[in-house]
Length: 403
Image (cartoon, rainbow, N blue to C red; front, side):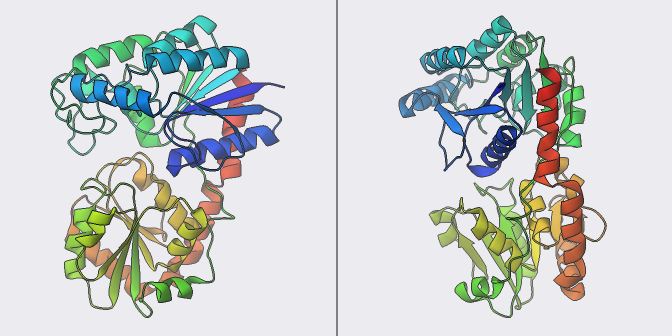
């Protein structure tokens, strides 16, 4: 029996964690032995888990990042211990996901991968792999990563550095160590990200696009949605939903507040994933709740909503857009990154970033047409294009092809 080891910052938590778990379960059902290694936190998993490091190693790695812009170069002891476990496991394939997150030393990891000559698949969920610092650059329109990062304009953004900017050094080191692997396939999760990979120093590796899929049994139209509206006291209201974690300016929190000022009294906004301080500051007419890991709760919220809005200013793919459509709820999303790849005719609308008046216009169009007009189109589009069984089977086929 062949063995695959996936490595990600989290296990079965958040969007990437759930994707890793779904791939693992499909791999097991396809005859593979599967393990997931993670560094930060985990949620209940049906897969064998391997913890990398501990809270102390994470904090120390964080200090290296904050003080010296050295993200990815801490956790030496934790990484060495982990690689000894990998030796005992002797996997046939190592499948990387988010290797940023203050938990693993990328130089030690890639030196090991080169030495062992194990086939590697690297699913890119953001842009961190080919920049000198940031995970996204769309918001500020930076293209230094195409040539060589320097004087990073986002050094205070994740993974934040308070003082130094070593983006040029980081860029060159990543370029060297990531390209020393001979058997590595890059898997961007969107066509937008694939185009950027082709412009980056990773373009010497084979690229195989696999968009994300979701569990269409979980994310489907729920029939107890009135209970949700009763719970939050919004019966008879046109419910607009937004989901993110964490909520920042880049995720569109300010845009929701501006939109709220234009909406009629019969509209209500419900935002999921806010922290307590953000919830306390919300104006009347916007309801905020904290993050939930319960996907059934999310499915109920998507189903109860009349419209899902994702005013994100930079996005690689957007699983929440897809989850909403699978529950029969139309979406409005900003024209950014891979977020637009999910919208088809009769499933929603694409709006220029920051254009609140245009956003308001499309809210009224959906409101006038009614959710029922879009629901069947949304569900059919999700089924035909983003079924997890179909999408993640592409990973299993890739495993079998390169192992």
